[in-house]
Image (cartoon, rainbow, N blue to C red; front, top):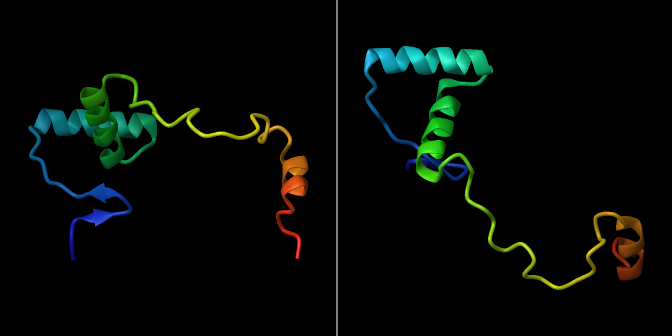
Length: 82
């Protein structure tokens, strides 16, 4: 019951036949589902060509090289030790 699955809301739209054929063709060319092609088209119309930026980047504190020196940081914090 309900209308969401994993953060996706189900909705229904009615498409003219020529638009439906164009989306079907686009999806086939891109190797994606029609639903994916429609979501991408709507995303482009709603946000422009760029998806919204994550605004939380850089707001936390900590060492800046964690991704490049994972093992050392895990060792320093004692992560995974019993």
